[in-house]
Image (tube, rainbow, N blue to C red):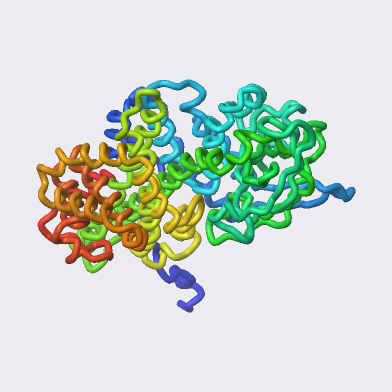
Length: 564
């Protein structure tokens, strides 16, 4: 028999010991921490819809949309074949399907279209589920959602926009609202080349074309260095106006009232590390049409209201990346064998997965508590404690959870080994997505300094918050010591506090997470988290995942995170 006639010629091996793709599971019902938080925050009425969505999002055809939308990135067409300036953004059909899925679930408007107790938590949980599928498509939905409470303060404008703004349909046509477009998206434009987070250095100017002031029409001249989702039907932007040229906020539509394209020229799309399915751009305003919203000179406070919501979504987006990564890591470890045993049975790998599971659950309970606070603090009788969660804890959470996502996704990718480092699986995409939430809507230092400002400006709320944690802390000496250390750091001299702002924000978030887990996470979860994040074991653990003391039930923590 010669080599060519041998039955195994050309076959070097059979494919074995490879984890099958993770699909066809329910992203809600496999997440007990999320389900419990939904019930606590009064959103149990939405469990059926979320369960249906949680299963739909893990179907193979839907999972494939994420890879397609990120491989076929947006393209800018500045001119039509006839030479007309159109600034059209072309997306792969997968992108539009992803946005349609988000809108269908009301994740751009749920608490505003039909307000009821728990609506904010219901929306945030749905956003969390979709974030585990794909991150870039979240951006325009986040900005649209955050714009609604700002626009509601402009009754005439909001009345004209309400129907397309709240619509659950995604209408991808690039046409004016007045031409029959059935839905709309709204973006933000704050950052300029010379300023970054320092929006008070903005140079864009607005000149009144009629009666100046609120609801007045203006022409804008200037630029924006990061203009997210330029295909949106309108953007809220900051520009200088009036005698003092103080910053005001403007509604700048994609099309002018006469139906012509507004004079907002897209110079180029950003070539980003991650978030590649989403278009971000640089633009110039060349006498662009805009309408002032809010009071003249109050642009920063007006748009900060929008930023507060987008910062919460940054927390949720990072928590969703953590959840997606830990689920993939556990699934892989249950199917991959090394050195004679499944990875998940190897003691050191169990330690890594258990530690990641703790971090993920802590992020989940935190953002769900913030969701409830956003809802409850908006009422006239909202307790100071709720205001503190929203105003003080949110920027701290945005700093800490978004930072932790970078290390987290890197560790989870390593669980997959070389398979995690290539683009044929989701882990590399998760890792590339992780840094964006730390940078957008205020970098880490901006968030930490905002925490200090909030403590000073909301002192009654701050005292109420810390006082509300004391009964839980009294039952746990480690937590009591951490709370005392936090209070002491806040009493330091201003210069010392500023230099220590990151440490204070970290201590604030870890204390908040510890309190929540002590109340709702079960003894094993709470004990492990508190000892390794705030107690003596934190020195033993350091900053590396997988250093939990052996006395904790590593296998139980993994099973709680994602039952197999």
